[in-house]
Length: 246
Ligand SMILES: *[C@@H]1O[C@H](CO)[C@@H](O)[C@H](O)[C@H]1NC(C)=O
Ligand SMILES: *[C@@H]1O[C@H](CO)[C@@H](O)[C@H](O)[C@H]1NC(C)=O
Ligand SMILES: *[C@@H]1O[C@H](CO)[C@@H](O)[C@H](O)[C@H]1NC(C)=O
Ligand SMILES: *[C@@H]1O[C@H](CO)[C@@H](O)[C@H](O)[C@H]1NC(C)=O
Image 1: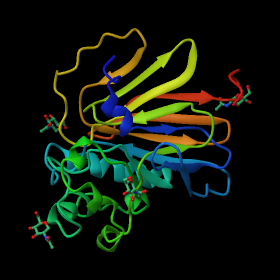
Image 2 (image 1 turned 180 degrees about the horizontal axis):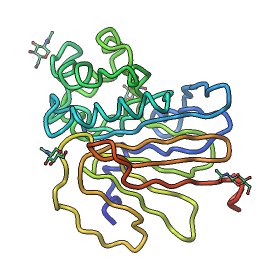
Image 3 (image 1 turned 90 degrees about the vertical axis):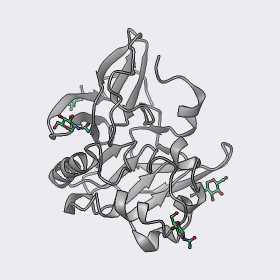
Image 4 (image 1 turned 180 degrees about the vertical axis):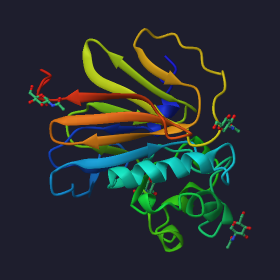
């Protein structure tokens, strides 16, 4: 399958349904620090996920950002997850690199996106100065930017989310409740590089877009959107109805 080589795992996120939803940050694999994000009063969390985006607005990054703003406002999101490859082609050079504001602050300007962004680094970020994105000083430039090394939302893995592949995709298995999701459509699309081979591929869109997740203790509602904000594919997961017992 497209998403099996090692590099993608290092930048991947596992997102799980939760009672108390928390981002768990794996430092070097062994130790976990926990970034709590308090759910809304009714116990649900609304999240957008985007990957592979920072190109100074080019390759439809700006259009995708606008539609994220529309959906973000409508869902009253709690935060945004970035799956990595945040700045092309080589990350940022330092915390005052203008590429940061030109590709992040000045692009994701919608009211609905003025929320914390939990950011994972991708291979393109590591070919630049990865530490600059993890430097707390970056938050003086834009306070939304929370860089995490690797993250999970508690507990019991239901959803595994990654970027890197420039597309939107959903892979499931009949014999496992785990859903593998790619949200890597933040700007330049793959445009035909992908060859589908897996029988477990539920959905693939070789173009730009993003995804949303509405998570509660028992239910998840997920959707992929294209550059115009049209829902391409949506589905729900119901923990109470499934037998995997988390
Ligand atoms: C941007 O999106 C439009 C659809 O709204 C598409 O026709 C166009 O090819 C996209 N541009 C790029 C550079 O991908
Ligand atoms: C930060 O990076 C930018 C872009 O490479 C460069 O122009 C600038 O001189 C750098 N600033 C510092 C303080 O190193
Ligand atoms: C991520 O890992 C690197 C290398 O181990 C470390 O220097 C950095 O402080 C970590 N960043 C965060 C936000 O935990
Ligand atoms: C999930 O399943 C439970 C029990 O079968 C049901 O009460 C609930 O309405 C379902 N939720 C959704 C969103 O389908």
